[in-house]
Image (tube, rainbow, N blue to C red; front, top):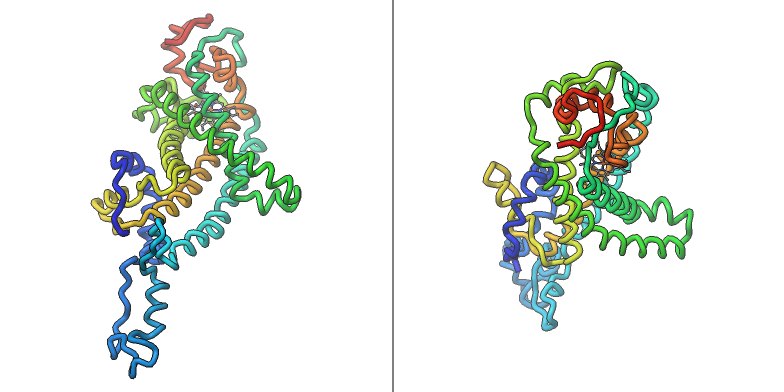
Length: 371
Ligand code: HEM
């Protein structure tokens, strides 16, 4: 029962990077100190009589010893096909529910409201970021059709996944009282199907984006200068140098790739329960660099951790993407065209991506194709 299922071992390494954050959380005592460390080989405490009831009135063992073992997750034997039925109490189930309905739901709600407040405040203070030199009227191709298709497959699927996912987490608190059980049930079931199937479109989009853009998203020294100047986002006429992608966009890119892979793997573990065991292997790898995490996880524990991790990563990603959507649409004049028509104004290109603009326009202002 304790054996960790070791199918798909190669996938666990993909989770490694993004699991560091959660590992810190777990290592800090959050999960490790609670019943996530519940053993399925419980140590039944020694009693002076060795568990024997004096006089054997109640049998050879005290009821309290038996129930303690049950409470600690002891695995008995059953004759039905599912051996998991032989575990009467699995404490991680309680912890799973407490984490999901407690801190994750509460802090997640704050994150959602917080990012909307930050974006609104930024808009109120900075307004729409204009092209300082004004539009030139000349354009240059920024993203070709394949790049735009990759972007919109990812974007549309992500938005539906985000909305339907948030409904799974918050719908009963927010929509159920407004819509009533019949309508809420109907839209939640439809949303669940959309969530299950669009997950695959999202995975395709993430892979396409990675292949198309990874070469332009390798961090370099220019990014540090860009970050030091806040990307010029906070003041007019400040335009730090940037190539095809600036440091802010590189952060978005890597968040989408790493977060996207992580949310996809944990999602697959939920779509196909008890088939994937990513956490035990990943924890074992983290233990090599000084963590002390449980590695012998049952498939039920694996699935429970997948649910929690999936929710945390998705909430962080949604907060990041809200900021991205703002800056890519109403937040910055001329930005949307890059993903709309694929053509951007050359003055926009010079202000926000000077190194790239010089390369693709040859310093000129006429319409010409990028790379
Ligand atoms: C309505 C929603 C969205 C709008 C209006 C939007 C807009 C844009 C625009 C205008 C760009 C090009 C920026 C440039 O020219 O430099 C862009 C790039 C990008 N988008 Fe979106 N986007 C949306 C949703 C999403 C979603 C949901 C994701 C991923 C989950 C995403 C991921 C990316 C990535 C990785 C890039 C390249 C890096 C970057 O420019 O930040 N976008 N988007």
